[in-house]
Image (cartoon, rainbow, N blue to C red; front, top):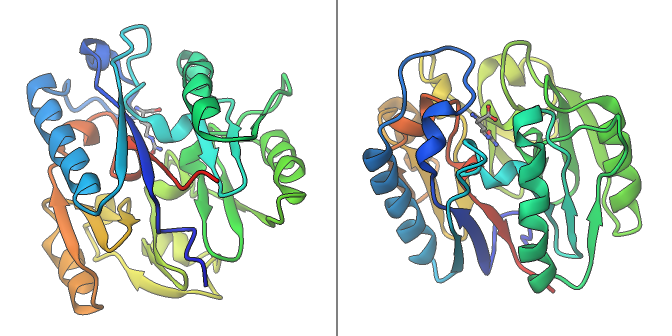
Length: 264
Ligand code: CIR
C-alpha cells in the first residue's frame, strides 16, 4: 500500500489576511481575532513540519478574506493537481492565485474550467481507493462530472455523494484517519456513504471536531473536544491538538488550512 492519502512530503499554507474579519460564515458568532488566529496557524505549521514535511508558507492575500483556507483551491493527487472553481463568488479568484505555486511543484496541472462547474476542495475526501465528493452549496454536479473526467486517466474513481443539508463542506463532517478508517459525524455516516470503511464516530455534541487531518504519523485535531480526542487516542492515533477557535468562527477547520501532497 502506498498510503498516498495520508503520507505527504509537502504542504502549502497561506497566512491569514487582516481582511479575515470579512470571512464568510453561516452564523455570525463574532469576528476572528487575527493575533490569536496567527498563533494557532503557527502551531499548525509547526505540527506539519514536525512530521518531516516541507511546508511552503504563502503570503496573505488581502483581496481574499477566506484565502487562509487553501484547501478549497486545488486537489493534489500523486499524478498531478487539479485547480478548483470555488462556488463562493468571493473565493473564485483564489484558485488562480494558487495555480502558479502548484505549477512549480507538479509536472501536470489540470483545471476545472466549465462556466457552470463549481467545486471546492473541502467537499473532496481522497482515500486509498477512491475520491469521494459531496455535492453542497459550493460544489455542483457539473463540477463533480468535470473532476471525474479530469482524473480518470490518472486511475482515480470518483464517487458522488451529498454533503448533509446545512453543512458547509463534505469534510466539515468527516476526515480520513488511515487507508481504511474515517472519523465521521453520525449525521453523515447515517447516509451509508462509509459502509466500506471502518468508522470512528464523533462524540455527540462534538460535531465541530469532525474536521481533522491525518498527516504522516500525526492526527492534527481541533482543541476542545476531549471525548472525540479520547476515541482517536484509544484507537491508536497520535493526536496533536491545535487551537481552532478563531477559524471556527468562519467555518474553517484543520483540513481547510493546507494542501497536502507528494509531487512526482
Ligand atoms: C468559507 O465559507 O468558504 C470559509 N469561511 C471557510 C472555508 C472552510 N474550508 C474548508 O472547509 N475546506
